[in-house]
View 1: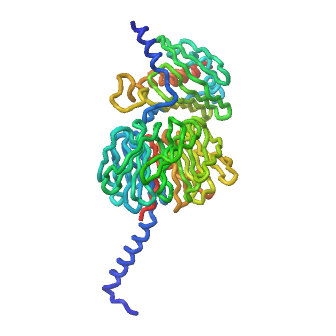
View 2 (view 1 turned 180 degrees about the horizontal axis):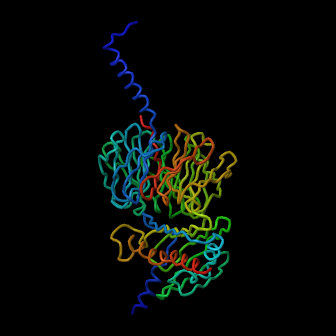
View 3 (view 1 turned 135 degrees about the horizontal axis):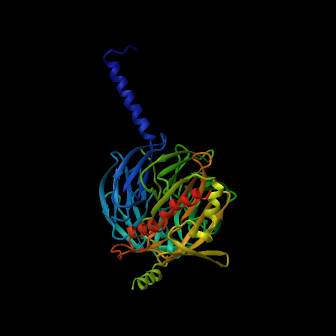
Length: 322
Length: 173
């Protein structure tokens, strides 16, 4: 086969853009909400560096996203709204007004509904992530904080912070199905990738409740001082818990349900998410304005990335961009 | 009248452990002291004698309540601050408190840590404060209970302490 000399650059160009398209497919981004300076730091988790900083509204806290919809949603608690970010341009394209104090936010895995917890008004809202229409709302007492949707998108789990319970709602009608008592002041909440286990982080009790989502049986384990959030590895073998007043992350072996290691991260670690592509855990250190990167194969901290002021990153903040 | 108002303020500003606002505030004070860490830590950990280095404290009293230790700082201005002593860690040279009452703050757990360096014979001291404003709900926020009032209270009360600690230790040879 013989290529014409003039065609060769064109072929190379096409090949190179195809390669670019492939590389882009594997980009994993972390969207870190900086409550102190009203911005979102966007981290390329493979390169471990901030590639963009997006101004949002006042006091951003909660983060949820959808790779399919190419959107990230941010709760701005002091502006009483939600910023909608287009992940292609990393620009805010809309603000959804939410009266009250929207903090916790979660996207259904089927990308059909966005859920928001308004903790002072004791309600949970269901929002259409494409039209921004409020589809439904339910009263969930008291002080709904962390929220998460089951992998089959059928159940919504809500940490009712001031009534020390996990409230389980049906996503069809937002009716409450169960109320599960946990330790004092549950805040962060997480569900395993297979949907069988729910984790509630109980701040004042210094514990994590490991809850079977079929039988509702519960095991309680002690972690560090003032734990906030937790994330499990996709194989559900390891749980990572941020301890805000110990500057550490507890590593829990889920087979034995024991803390096997505690690693120092940074000042006041809060939000935590798992990067399944690069096998790393990212932790937002509120008190130190950086994000710790933990290698999930060795469970050692390998890097700290400087972000904006007072990062919270409350929610599932990592997006595997398509 | 002023004293009377201060008493009312104290009664009102009893930090609730349950409800707090959505935006935590931070005051992160640091200082380097030309003294060995052990010497600095000895003064910092002695929580019952805060007046030895906290310039606006007149005297300190401590009280055991079951497993809890509470200390009351009586300020030269007349106010009283109550703090629970959560943990005194000699290995890490770190003392943790939980604020109980006396200021327009909520959910407030400060700590003081001492670490060696940056140079030989020096200590780095950090007084770290994370707290919320007193008013837990949405605007309108009552006067004196907003984020700015909480930050001002913490800065006015605690920020002069590290400068003073440095002076006291460096002058006591």
